[in-house]
Each structure stands twice: as C-alpha cells, then as structure tokens.
Image (cartoon, rainbow, N blue to C red; front, side, top):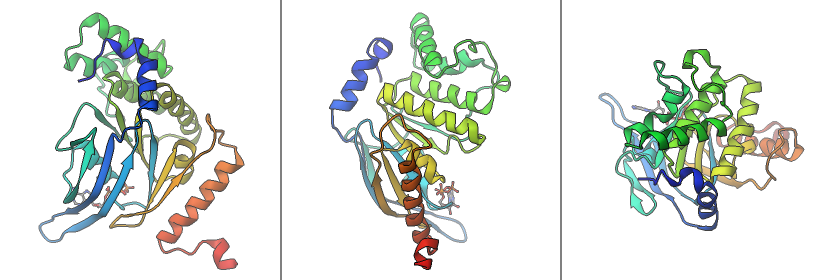
Length: 281
Ligand SMILES: Nc1ncnc2c1ncn2[C@@H]1O[C@H](COP(=O)(O)OP(=O)(O)OP(=O)(O)O)[C@@H](O)[C@H]1O
C-alpha cells in the first residue's frame, strides 16, 4: 500500500526514484487471449511480449478490435490471459491492485459527490485520516488545475474537467502505473489538445508509468515515449517506435507531424492497406 503521508512532501523524490531506478515495473510475456463463447471463440490477442520501464509513457495504437483494451484489462488484472503472464514489480498479476489504476473514456465518476468527494473517495476507502486526506486531495485538485471547483458536482463540469477529476482521483492513491483506455476519445479537438499538454505535465511531475490506448496515431506521438503498433485482430505487436521528440511537445512541430505520418503508414500496411505514397511511387 502506498505511504500517503509522503505523497505530497516527497513528490520530487518519488519522481527521482522512478527516473533513476531503471526497474521493469511491467513485464508482459507471451500474453494471449481467446474469449470463449457458447457458439464460437474470439481470438483477440496473439502472444504479445513487452517490457515497460519505470516512468515510461507507452502508447498502444491499432485498429478497432485488435485487442488493445483486452491487453490493458489483463495488465489491470481485470481480465485473465489465456496464455502467458504479466509481472508488475516482479509479482505475477493475478487480480486488480491499487498500484495499477485503469481510466476509461467515460470518466466513471460519482454524480452524488462533488469534485473533492470524488477525488478523496479512494483515500477514504483505504483509511487515510481526514486531515491528510484533505491535503492530498487539494494537492491533486491543484495539479489538474481544478482549484476553485472543489464543490462542483460532476454534471456541472465539461468533459475535459471530468477527465481531470478522474486523473486526480487515480493519482490520489499514489499508484505506480496508470492504464488509460482512450481517456480523451469523447472530447472535442480543442479540449483534447489541452489535455495532451496537461497529461504530459502531470506525467513529467509525477514520474508515473503510463500505458495509454488510442486509435489516434497523432495523439500517441504527441504523448508517448514509445508507440507500440498492433496488427488487426488477433492483435500482435508489429512495431515498437521510440519517440525522442523534446518535451513539452508542440503539436505544430513538423517532426511530430512527420513521425505520425510514418507510423500511420506502418499501421495501414499492417491493416493490409497500401499507403498512398508507396503505391504512387
Ligand atoms: N468479453 C468479451 N467476450 C467476447 N469477445 C470480446 C470480449 N471483449 C472483447 N471481445 C472481442 O475481442 C476483440 C478485441 O477487443 P478489444 O476491445 O480488446 O479491442 P480494441 O483494440 O480495444 O478495440 P477498440 O479500439 O474498438 O476499443 C474484439 O473482436 C472484441 O469484440
């Protein structure tokens, strides 16, 4: 269980620990998945292997139905693998853990609680004393730029603000891994662009390990230190790109745009589409 009294004071040392300690908090080894149905089975994932280092930001891109969400759920411990295993900090994952938090497109917040109540919910569950709870909650409200909205109810917030509440709630219990399944998929383009900058800043300041699923190659390149490309179902990894663009990233950076185009053409090739430039050349 994370040590909550240190969450705020040691924010920097937590970050340093993640950065300097080059451990492998996530090791995915030959993980495959077949959903067994009454009439037919669905082969969702072929054996997939991936090591993720502490503090890495890894994006998964691939066509709809290629098993990205399935893999994320297996890492979260919410779904069991048909073959292979996931290790988190050296332990085989056999169920959910407060150290690996999953966030979805629908922020899944409690409508009967205000922003503060939502963010402190998890802290209450694990018995963090009131005063400490209040301090940790306020810290994360400030971090996601919701200062002044502590008493707002969820239905009064925009989609982007809801996602920020969800991120703050996930961070409050100090997990080492955030698993994000298309968290910005339902947002308008402008809000989405703002959320990229916010998430990048949050990641930089907290040093969390992030696995981020998206359909959107541009989003993956804007955020990820790695972009892992999946083939169509049954999904397997076709490429693992390192993205060395400087941070904070500018969405107008032509290198970002060029790299997105390159990865998109790899994705299209995996989908059996011949990229335009290639067919013309
Ligand atoms: N519980 C389930 N039972 C049966 N089949 C499932 C189940 N969950 C997912 N599938 C199937 O497994 C395949 C992979 O699904 P998954 O949601 O992991 O893909 P995805 O890449 O995340 O897709 P999307 O980007 O559309 O969310 C799909 O064909 C899906 O229909």
